[in-house]
Image (cartoon, rainbow, N blue to C red):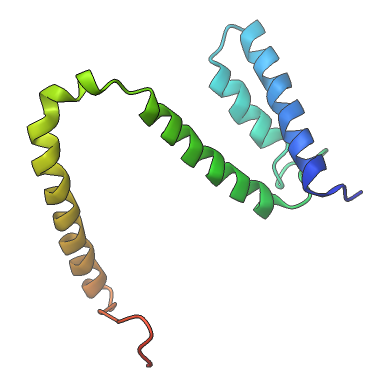
Length: 120
């Protein structure tokens, strides 16, 4: 039976609730209940599964981005003051070194620099 994305979301929410209840009754971390609920309704398990796993994956990616955004909003700026100098120097340095290292490793595997829009 195909119920669409609304039915898949409802299934995931109900499974998460059941996993949360079971984990709390067993005095386990709630994240363990959520992970087991995700496995239970995943496309590789039997029983009730989501109809279109790709749509659920897209929603999960959006959820992770929103979660990280919410964590960033609750991070007090006073805690960042001691690492201000390290952050302002280290962040651009890490980005540059990662780009150089990534370009070097890609070159080892035969990938080269290619501009967007240029033909073969």
